[in-house]
Amino acid sequence: MIPKNQRGTAVNGRRQFLRWMAAAMVVATLPARLWAARPNAAFEGENPDSVLKELFGDIGIQDSSQITLKVPDIAENGAVVPVTVATDLPGVEAIYILVDNNPTPLSAAFTLSPKIPSDVSTRIKMGGSSMVRAMVKTSDGVFTTGKEVKVTIGGCGG
Amino acid sequence: MATKKVKIRAKIKNGVAQIKALMPHPMETGTRRDATSGEVIPAHYIEEVTCSLNGEVILTGHWGPSVSKNPYFSFNVLDAKPGDTISITWVDNLGESSSGEAVLK
Figure 1: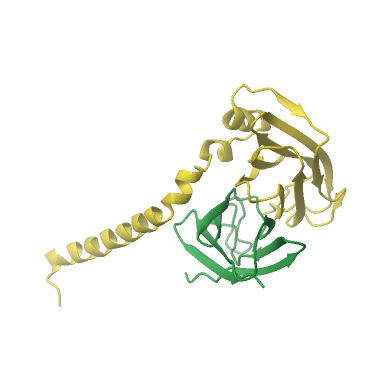
Figure 2: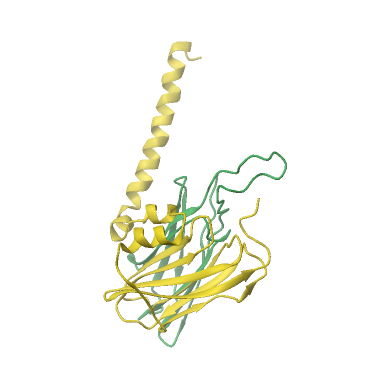
């Protein structure tokens, strides 16, 4: 039995160990983080304008017909909305998916190496009907296209 | 909590490898309430996904809580050959992580 006055330190030791483990895991993922850091402030942005400002600063964003955004016109279940973004713009560095009316509009950001054709698919949640936007950052600037999606049952529900 | 492996399906077609991944994860937004207790369920979501081809990082995904539960994710890789290894690792906001690997055929 551990004397009462030392029990605290045993717990502390374990906590410290857990903290150390967590730190080690962060270190293990460091190369990826150096490759591209997570834009945390943009993920916390609560309206599309603040997200775009965090991501791109004051760079002008141009509409582009060279981006294909595949989302359903009507999503029956807002919890699972399939999204595909593809583009033949040259020099693609990153692809972002935004849902204007979600509590935090930025849903996903992908950083691509030149070995990846610019074509990614995932599934996102939508709290309600909203404009869904794909933003593509290339070496020449930032390009976007958007589509209105009607949601019959919201996916952030509580 | 134990984490489940990333499931990967990879297929080469005309020199382009199509990679599909499924990651079992609750993806809690932090805004949902427990139906019986009414308490807010804490946020628990994948923040970062890293995809490598033969150990070299080729794609990173940064996600918010608005990616669907049990995320599905797919992309293509140019110049991939049979025998190449695709690995996908994720880390969530609580520091948990998991990974999966597939050899291209």
